Image (cartoon, rainbow, N blue to C red; front, top):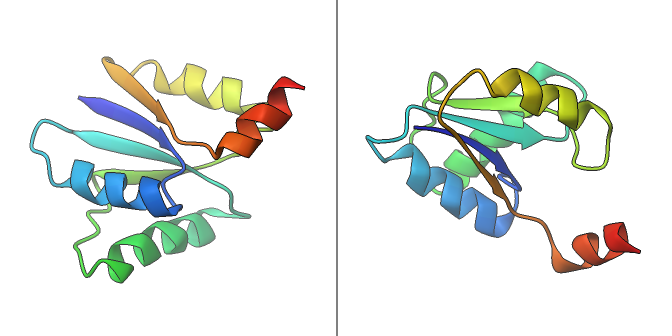
Length: 102
């Protein structure tokens, strides 16, 4: 199974990311990360694993540069739909959801 995860660099999302990465049933985890480039995105994900003293499998956990509030998210998820089945887990702060709905 492939997973597209938002919020992976946050507190709850980071815990979820590390636990999902340990599951044999999960082939790939694509993490939406706000970053300027691939190196910064990988570094942010690596920090999550380092804080938990866990192994960062770069072949399994793949950062995707983007933002929930930007137009490129639709293009990014459309591209990832080729990886079937793809499960999407969106972790967002409640205030952000509320702000978007105004």
